[in-house]
View (cartoon, rainbow, N blue to C red):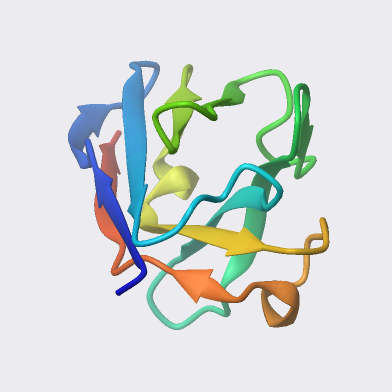
Length: 120
C-alpha cells in the first residue's frame, strides 16, 4: 500500500521557521517528482514546490523563503519554511508524480496533509 505521510506542521509566529517532512512507503519514488501543495480555507489547492533529482522549482509566493529537498535513499522529502507569513497558513500536502509539474492533476499519490498556521 502506497502511503505519503506528512509531519511537522503546527503553529508558528510570522517571521519564524517550520520544517515539514514527508515519508513515502509502499514503493520507491526515486524516479518520481516530489511536490508540496497547500490549500487554505475557501481556496483551491496551489503549487508550492517540486523536486526531482536536485534543485527545486518554486511558486513565486515562496521563492527565496522555502527550500525543498529530498533523500532518495530514505524515501523522504522535506520543505524548510523560513520567514513565514500569515498568508502561508494552509494545509500542506506532499505528492508524487511521474512527470514534474505544478498542476495537481499531474500527481498520482497524495498525503493526508498537515496544518500550518502562521500567527501575526
